[in-house]
Image 1 (cartoon, one colour):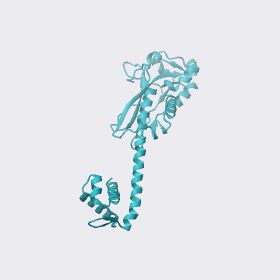
Image 2: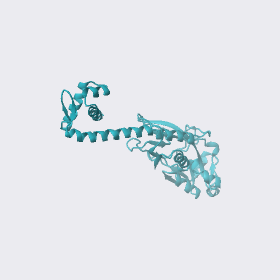
Image 3: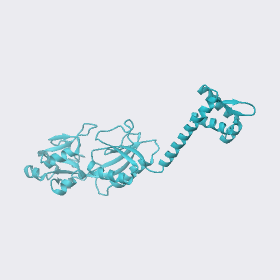
Image 4: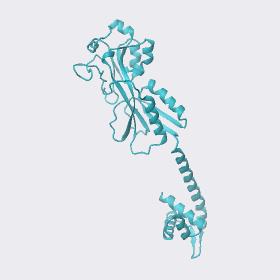
Length: 302
């Protein structure tokens, strides 16, 4: 910015042919103008003006530099104009990391693109815990409670969970009537990529928050695999309801232990703290909040 100030001073002196008049227009003293020009000449290693008691005229080098200086200042002015225009509307590329919950989020993202055609979405779907700042994301959608103090967060939605199995599997293995009945079933589990731990199934068990010692017939780190295996009769899975909505509607899967399950997950949008929130990010956060929030009652403590 100091260099830009020197360029502006230089051009003003050229146009007024006077250190005094240039200083008056710039709101500084003639002495400050002279020092600014002297520093600029020292930096460039050339003399820009012929000075006399009556006039200030450009040297040959000054004539060449004037063309560049005016071009630079014009480009800066254009850039400021473009940024000020963008400040009023959502435009530009928005890089977002999301968990593998496409069946719920994709329709909302599609609607966002239609509503804000000036925003280009750059989407990265992954259940791992990305580093929002180090990896250069504008925003990240998380299911877990935010813990990074460098990030701002907003709760933008909830989703229900349920326990499902195929009618074929239940016909063979029997339908569990209580959580204790799961001890004799094939249970397919989710492993958290960040910690390596298995997800607890939030079912009452002697006052505990969730059952930890369930049989393990299969473990994976995504929803689609467990849904596929459940539909093919490989066992019972604890999954987000939106991931099996179509399968439940068609009868390919059915829920079990409904009287014992009243849990939901919570979506949070995270973004780097301390940054000016550009319109594209503000629009995305507001849009996701409006579309993902649900009024369905569920216990958000698990």
